[in-house]
Image (tube, rainbow, N blue to C red):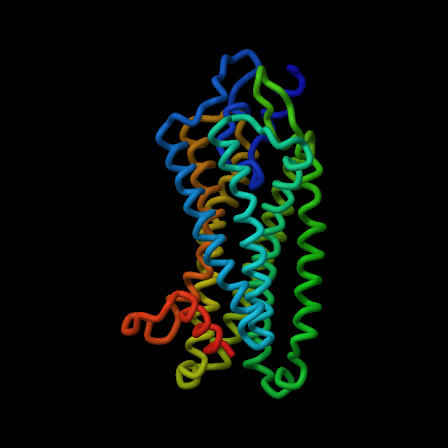
Length: 322
């Protein structure tokens, strides 16, 4: 038991395990009450995750219905359908996380411990990869309009999406592989037993899931701004703004998590402040999964002047994209 605990203390926190885990900050000899969700920070985090779950299921479900069944298939709707599916699947797994936070014990078994980790990491990779694809697609459409008009097809876009999901799935296997369950008294703890692979997983996630996508998107933006200029920008204002907001929301939500994850690698002791930073940054990362549908809605035409239904606002945003 002591060996298990020692291995846990060095690799307790990652995206899959953002929720409070006192098992990770305590030594084997400390008397820890694992039914711990009594503090204000934990209660607020639980409430926040319940809100993310409800809004994410409703909002992304609406986007899936509109882009998948109501609207004519296009390259743009293919991108946004994939993005909504990724966020919807992640939000659907949040009740497992919420239950774990409340009880301090994982009651769903080893398979769900690993699967929950897999889905969370899959959401991170697939979301940022789709945003990169949208940025590259916008860039190609503006810089090579004739070629894009002839080559951009729904079939090719679907193939690209399948490749994105395949690569994202492969990259999500390592975090799930290292997920394990250990017992502490009457509590089962779902944690990441990385052994000596913690730094590899964290830096791989940072480079592939943040740094390279950021540089790619920045390059696409630079090309777009250089190509369009001030005069032609108005023609592409709506798609450009939607893309900008989606990408900005992703980086605002994910940057704190990436920073905290890297800082955590060099820490030998877990302070309460750092533990709180883990909770906050993890919850902020999760919040990205319900923001996108509201970005579509708020970007719909004449939002402030007309009281269209929520679904009509989202469909309007996609119509303007097309």
